[in-house]
Image (cartoon, rainbow, N blue to C red; front, top):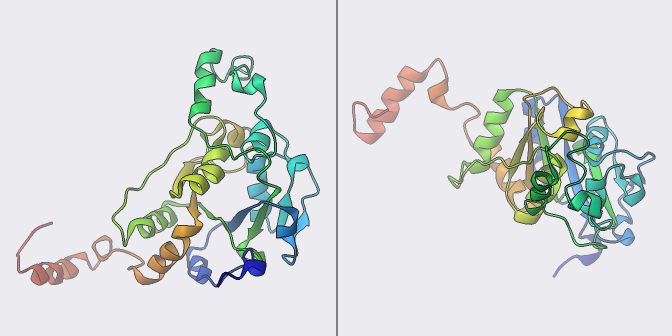
Length: 259
């Protein structure tokens, strides 16, 4: 039987393995709340400022647990992507890009809107953010910001360790928030966004360039965390013991050499 009253509360998840990664920017749980009543019993306070949606991720990484409503959203994507409101015709027509010299003309800017994943208007009351040590709700997304390639390699390897699935990264130059939040939530696909590329995040100077923000939807979360627990933390072929290990691996195959 579904525990309806507690459906939004944090479930038991093996987040402790992430401590081993030593992330500079704290892992964050993110959630869409459909109704104000969904917040009951979670102990979250409303964000006390008006900022861009991507900036809210940094607020949580800096230690704050909160929820944000429409009046907390500073920029247009944070309104229409979340379903807080309609897409403004000025934006939808591609008219923002040319005057800000982001795109040369409206037709290029307009095309971007066919790729994004806005939620239906009126379906989201608020969005919740919390670092894992303050997490009280069961997240729709686990967002990991990797500040070095070792972290990135391990997380992405864990994402496909038991499935062999593709490692993908999708994004547009503008509305990077769509690819961190909406795209993985709507499609169920793990996605990676590279910092220093997306217009708004670069403008706000949120992160050094070249880092990877990996968004893991709820239906992959336990699997990826389990893989991080179970898989070799470093592949034997990438260690100083490679030669000895390869002898063992080839013996398992009954061959002298294959890779």
